[in-house]
Image (cartoon, rainbow, N blue to C red; front, side):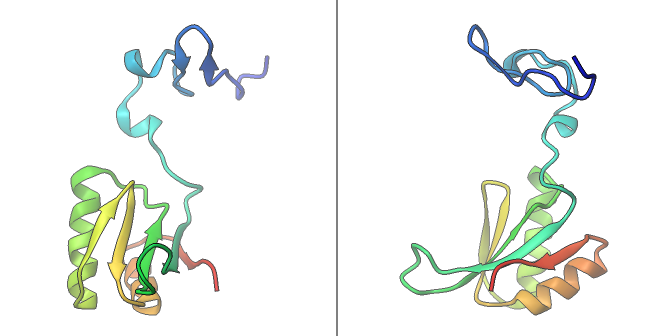
Amino acid sequence: MNKKSSPVYSTETGSLCPGCGQPLSGCTCSRKAKTVLGDGNVRISRETKGRKGKGVTVISGLPLHGEQLKALGQQLKKKCGSGGSVKNGRLEIQGDHRDLLLDELRDCGFQAKKSGG
């Protein structure tokens, strides 16, 4: 077996950590190492689905967790002058602010790009 490939699921124990190979409940590697998101690119898109036609700007792929993600969300909401939330590791900012957020995220050092139409 190649060192880069390892099982990610076992019928006996369920999901396995890709880092240490242990069940997720008994993982021995650090939380941050096993929850790295995305491919290093932060994607900014606009969604209206399920919001009665109201658009939100969605930022996904951020390599931040918990309080860091909330703090960045607060900073970006202030910059846009609108509300928003953090859901499932994604930032949702009310309104269409893709251009402004793209510049702001690049200034913060993230490799960001627009996604979708």
